[in-house]
Length: 173
Image (cartoon, rainbow, N blue to C red; front, side, top):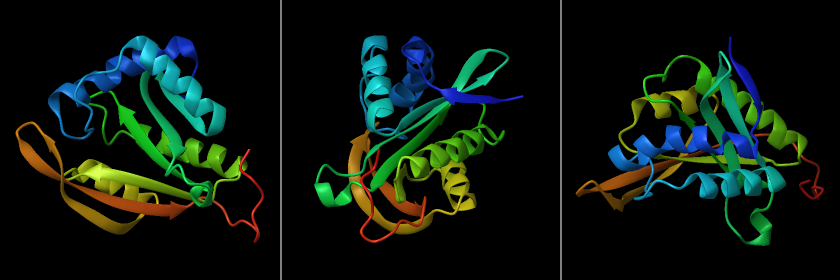
């Protein structure tokens, strides 16, 4: 059975190990060099401070993670956030991504965020299907926006509501 919990600095090595194959072998992320464990720990700390970073455990092993961060740095965007989810390779379509995202959305809504934004390098049927099943709606595609693995890639963007907020909204916590 899956356990979703808040990430800790001690999860950085597992998160870095999960992420590295996506960096080196796919265009799912546009990073070129895998982050170090120290860099991953810093990312976890930053996300937890303002948004959230969660890990997914199975049999006491971290097998996935999801996090959120600012969508854009300008103040008017502060109720929106960009979200991402990563699972150990070979664990797609097992319910882990859904479990992580549902818990992440709950945390973000409780903190006062209104909208989640997700970008997906195309083609990526598993990610596209997950996001659609969770209520994300397409909002546009950046064509030939990223060069990786010797070719140009498109990125599809989608969004979903997290919470209904009063107008004017209170500041995210």
